[in-house]
Image (cartoon, rainbow, N blue to C red; front, side, top):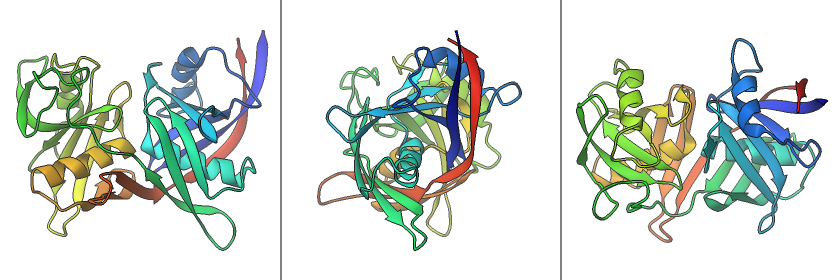
Length: 284
């Protein structure tokens, strides 16, 4: 059966997704549609598909599918865009929204401009997890400044941080010329990562910022990664390359990350941008 739905294309610091309000447009096959619609030549184009739905233990829920059809547990950039979407499209008047994800409930704090549009969003990303045996195959499920062997036999030193989804942060001399695709693709599938892994490559800059590029599990190189920025800030603090607050500069923009000493939570603040609205027809 052919169905027509409305969608919105949005991005957070260049990390772009296709957003569908499933309260109005239920979707039965998001894994397949994420692959088809994300194609930048034959589809809408994007890093994946995000479904906005009702929340059982929260105000709303989010499901996110990478452009290879795999389902992700969480995306910081997408969660900020959802906050903007919910407020500006009139689904809520709240400026603090509880959003249910596969990584738990996240709290979005909307920063609203004088014209009643959402300028930036701060997301409480909860506490980072440094020991997750299901994601890091070491005896204690942790790795700080340790070595991982990639599938091509090369060895890379980095720090494991889980923000619900797994990240491996590698500090390099010059990330601007680094082979992100070549190394990221073989590290993602390393035996040390039972669920595969997002790989961040980072260079500390003279101005105190952290220049980051990312190879996302299931998506490849993306312009930005919110959970990756959080993991990068935590890894930099753990390895004494930065304090507990960092400005993360990515290919698509900047995020401010603060790892609170008071509650141990990571707070991510950054922009959310609507690109365009449209409709698309597909066979269900």
